[in-house]
Image (cartoon, rainbow, N blue to C red):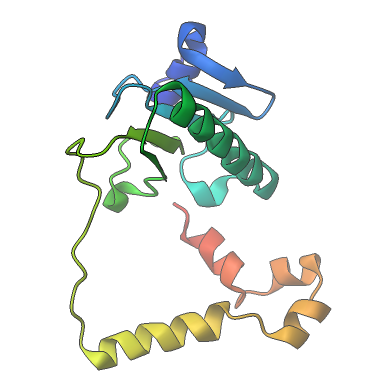
Length: 165
Ligand SMILES: [Zn+2]
């Protein structure tokens, strides 16, 4: 028997609203609002970085379609589509999920934050780092094959993979 709460949720077919070979969409057992849906990779994957790209794409498409249906069926004013990625981001169950939360005007739900003030130098350091590491370097991207990317210890994606516990 699995200990994972999300793996267990997928087994309860009465709560499943969509499934295919890769994904299962279920009604949340801890809903923030009526009609709160979770889109889960069928495979037990802890965080979003571990989800293969083709399944990430499907998760986004399925989440968008469910969100569209929720708008119509529940007469919503909005939805929040979000991923709690890591415990620092509020993730409590180690099985990646896209949360689709129905919203209505003045529903009192708090998903906002106040912008923080940072020293100019702190901002500049982070910005320079992100631009240096993430902005496509045209020649490198065009010439580096996938096998070379995976062998490159300085590649951003490989650094990300090493970061996963
Ligand atoms: Zn699981």
